[in-house]
Length: 110
Image (cartoon, rainbow, N blue to C red; front, side, top):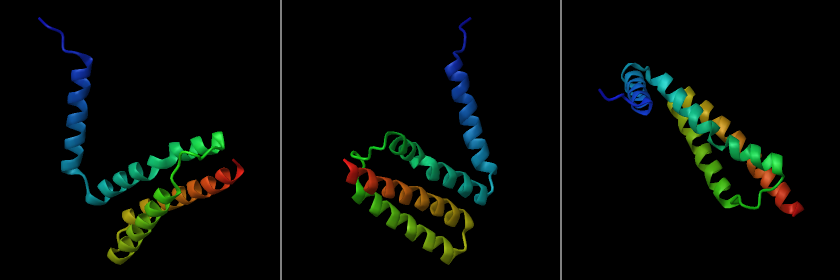
């Protein structure tokens, strides 16, 4: 009899977890989880820039466009009275403004 690989078991577990949670999940909880994941996406980049004090490879234009889009999401969340949208995008704006500030400071130094 063949042994079932641990990778296959983990895949089944995550498949069950993912779809099981999505089917039963409250839409606000889904929005909060999605917001947390997308909000923390830039944190590793911010930490790296702060540690290395180097932002040469970061596009300032990209950050400006991203912050503008996130700000529009906040506005949309306010209009729709959607707290998950407001909070997650508000946090993302703060992270990206911090990254933009670091970029401007560290690019002037070099």
